[in-house]
Image (cartoon, rainbow, N blue to C red; front, top):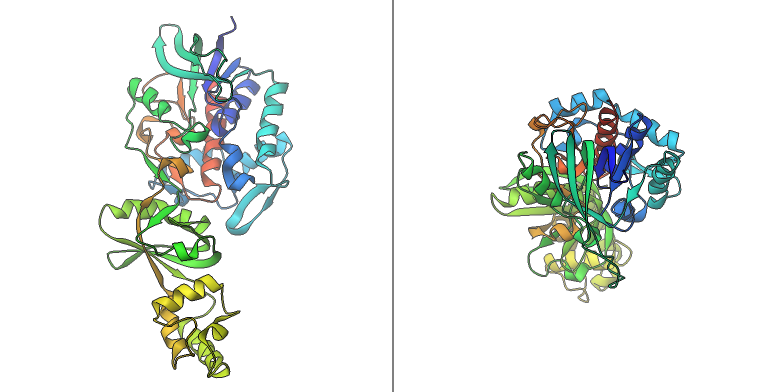
Length: 420
């Protein structure tokens, strides 16, 4: 029967594709259901299309909420190095970047998707695209999955709405998170989990660009620079990171900001939250003041703009000068260096929120970990059901950690689901 198999996998994202490979290698017949017109759609958007698919420094400390006991068992069942071995076997070569980030050697996300699809083609695993699973129900002989044919956005004449029923002995729910709805993200998987009796914690966007109060960033729109960022709430530094910050018309983005976004949004519920950016982290405050004093002596009697040129990105130095009360075209004021240091070393931005799920790389919240086996990702409530990837109440830092968890959960679930 075309719509019957040992294992049905709902979702052809990272965890779903990895699960399909391992379940098929284990001898199970497998069908993958995917509502998008192509598999791996969200993988293609990761790392600005370069696909930061893992990290050399994967540890439980890189995930939230803190779940060391759960993840210790997961990483014992499938050590991080074995995930890289999985990709090596598929033929993928990779290179390392800053902070341990791993990228395909081609820097093309499509290659990560393709090595998985080539393996599934070799294993003869069908992927039913434009097929959205609506519900999963448990019966005496396994599971029944109701699905509907999705109309592609570019073809309004294509048939859509046709209902299909799939049946399987085991189901891997890998439907992904609510982020990036424009490319298929949705909360549908969480709804199916709730209908099956699983506990699902509230969802929120994570690894997401942040909005700031007022016009603080409009004048800096488009500027990218490496900085040390401190996240401050209640007068206390709650997180610190180093990397690229990108200023936009609405606020801030870039790898360093994304690292802080989860903690920033969580802290907003308790009071005002600020990012303090150090634009010249290689200098201690006293050393920077000395440098600026020497520079001011060399430019004595000239316009501040002459003093500033070549010191830092012009938009940044203009913004810092504005906060220090220094006019760009004015004659260089005395002690301008001392006045500039605080603005360059602690440029404060008040965070007001995020761009939401439409720009969120990850969804925080999801299925309670207490209801999932950490070594197989099997449901503890329903035999034969497996829950992977973003559907879990477990999200990682920016830097390849979330994709690594997706591969890990998919591989372990696929192996367990292939066992008769």
